[in-house]
Length: 112
Length: 113
Image (cartoon, rainbow over the protein chains, first blue to last red):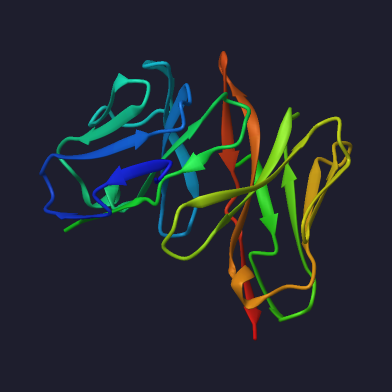
């Protein structure tokens, strides 16, 4: 069983479209995250949720809206996609903010 | 600017050799973590060292932490081709009232058979 699973693995779309990425963890963790990795491998935190509550919003454009229906799920919806949104998006979870993170396998988003 | 910076950016060695990667950070931390990322995959946690620890071992991995110099090193002994990956250090950083785990840009390690 995959601990942190995210779908889809690949997402190719046109500029201006709206898309969603889903994430689920079966580890019973309280905290979930979205990270963005750019083409230079730089990994930057976007959001973190603790027990469905938004804890960190790292000055991400409001076109990005995370939603956590329960503590096992954290989805990311992106409106009006732009070329600069092309990146790999990783979902992760941890039992506590200071403990190790478990990452999903990533969603490669390509905006054309 | 980033909290953690790995050095070197890229490292190429022969199988069986040791690989050392360094990480420097700017602000005080509670812990420092090292992760590995194989090409096209998610990050995998390797080791966590707390600010009151100086050295930690896990199999062929040895991590040191020098809080006075704000630096850490990851040593992989007797490297294997399967160790080829990017290695990232991550530090916990207080952001407002909350902490977050901040990653460096990574070291790309290539182990040649």
